[in-house]
Length: 113
Image (cartoon, rainbow, N blue to C red; front, side, top):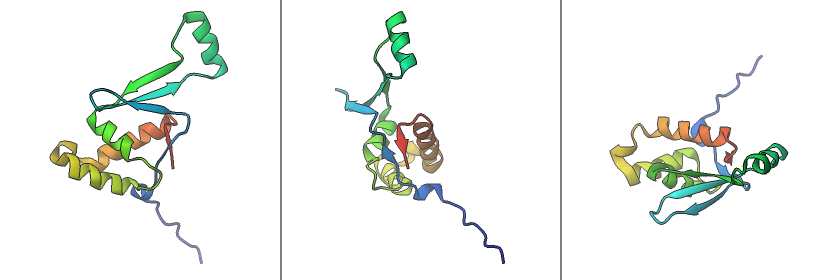
């Protein structure tokens, strides 16, 4: 008898921030991600074109709130509940937007599960 593989629920994933990504809180309370550019190619490009040592990515208020919630303990579902409590209708559709944002963070190696 073949066993059916259970579908994984994306909302059960527990995101954890990458140790390579630094971040700071700006004066306006929003989060700025600081992504180092330290591969060999990045170093060569920096020397040739005088580019910065890191990318700085400013998050909006929803992104900043989500980033602060990523602690390696909360599931995506729990983060969504907190997002709904904080931003109410402004964050709708919550889980579609949250999952898309998490995928972007994951694809850029800013978080892991």
